[in-house]
Length: 482
Image (cartoon, rainbow, N blue to C red):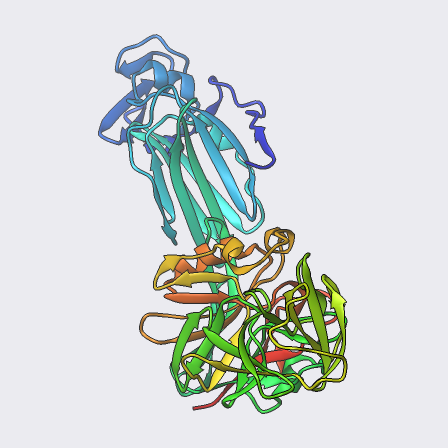
């Protein structure tokens, strides 16, 4: 709980008088007496004489105003009293009742509930100062404290109890309205709220049909909108080496392999049938005299491993044949720094798969085990068949810091009914995005490149939240009209 403070009563004492309506009572004058009636009770005070119903020696009311002290002495309240604290909870307003014992009721959460009956006497709620956009009205009734809420836009709440010490917590979230705009038949732009468990706004294009294509080119960077000028929507794609613009991961464009797999989850599709998987890719190296040997690839090493992504390649105890074009430039001890435009074959020291020398011809070939017309690798996986599936350690994400950073997140997802979502979230973490998408009803979901690369363009306009200058990317997913 952040910035939670003790609510002071600001001069509210038990002897202070409050309008009778605050206690659920109606005031009227009847035969010279003051009558307070409602909630199944009738109280009568005769000025100059005292309380007639019930006959008690208590302080006098002030016409339509009654004191809390008098009502407590009259036995008006049938519930125990609770202390009150308030504070901010993210974009929400939190109210905490400190209870005299365990809470025996039920919690709730959901949209647009505007009235709560808290089964405790909580006079401290009368001094609440809610944030802008939220208005509260409090009544102290025999069966508990009634809290009525008005909010600009939509209201989401969570009511739950905690133990040790016993507390009842009410979080109120006044949120801007959701948005929906049609783009084409079966395609719409939406801004929606999901919960993980805090409210998270998602900016998404939802499509029941259309044509999805990977767009872009290795080594060339541009804003997503410029990679597909005629598209309805464009979402940034997978990862790339920031120094060179070399794509990292599988990229298949109209059946042609543009980039080899790195070992993470990829989006694979034919037409409007989408799949998420770590692709089974068969890679083969052809030697100078036509010899062929199967090899591991990038983050999936084997005895012989081909590397296609710039950076350190090979493992201690191996040697690396550096290849540019289709010629061996040299054989070096591993690990070796692979530069842009080259690939490398790693093998046990002194034991290449076939005799190799500088200048020899060496070629790398590969194909998907199950052919797909389109594929784009990213990761990590967020949801799989309606279940939380965020396990980045299984996808060769060695540095956990980028996945723990609070930043905009881009993802592709779809529902069980086949509605495709291209989306970017407010700043959050991938695991919370996974929870939010599960809450929203997604069936499968894959994180694309996030942070400064996370962008959703709709008809050439950036719709996702972004501060600063949008970042050029190497690949993107472009949605065209049905």
